Length: 314
Ligand SMILES: C[S@@+](CC[C@H](N)C(=O)[O-])C[C@H]1O[C@@H](n2cnc3c(N)ncnc32)[C@H](O)[C@@H]1O
Image 1 (cartoon, helix red, strand yellow):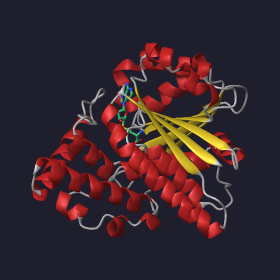
Image 2 (cartoon, protein in one colour; image 1 turned 90 degrees about the vertical axis):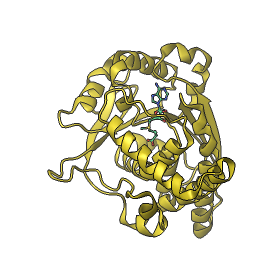
Image 3 (spheres, rainbow, N blue to C red; image 1 turned 90 degrees about the horizontal axis):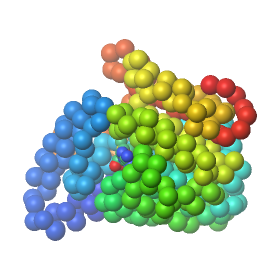
Image 4 (cartoon, helix red, strand yellow; image 1 turned 180 degrees about the vertical axis):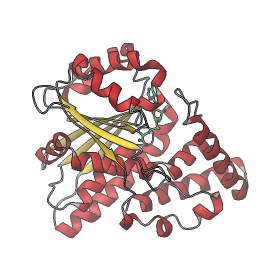
């Protein structure tokens, strides 16, 4: 379901780009391949410079990473009780989620996958989903992806004979590591149930103290019941997850669960080969399908959830 949704977005985006710029499709696929190679280089840096404002770079990210980061969001929401309790408790009510550095909105796909695949989870009456990202151009595909998510929810709800929630997508362009940005947006967090940071920390490793300050501001503005979910790269020396655990108490998150290390693959039933058709051949690379290092099989991702208040210590 995940990759099928992405396929629809990629089809429309490539056709639109070809039409608007008169670029032959073969050149578009080649350019996507080049962006992917450059992105892989940049992912080795502490402050990667990735030109997400370039439409073909965003397409590259959609193709290569979104199914993987959506899968990680899905696993985090299912496996971390702090997160799944919030999702389950909002059944039949409005569920409000905010993705920090949400870019294309992968976290929404992960949440939709949870509702679509687990019939024991009662869907909310409406899903308010806010993406905050410093690159405004992500807003372009976000509303389309939200429409795909809404369609997937409608299909799952029809099978169950229940009514499907609408997704209310919102997008605010902002630097989420800048505490000053929150002056205009503090109200946003007052009724958000779930705040998700999915591969945001790893793009801001040179600004960790600033990020911690920003996080403190968000936690202070959030309701006492809000759950915070962090998903990111698990490095060999555990730099990111260790940092996160070390700052939790100082930002006001006194209860936490995890980190859980992820070393699996995408769900087999998401069938990348079928859903992405010819794209892997045309682009020359397969999308990210696994969360372990090829040689050592060590995990490459982790997730952790936290809340204000008392609970299990990390
Ligand atoms: C690796 S992508 C992750 C996107 C999405 N969360 C996912 O998991 O697929 C990192 C995203 O964070 C955004 N980003 C990086 N630094 C940011 C900052 N300081 N403020 C807001 N967004 C930021 C980038 O624009 C990009 O969309």
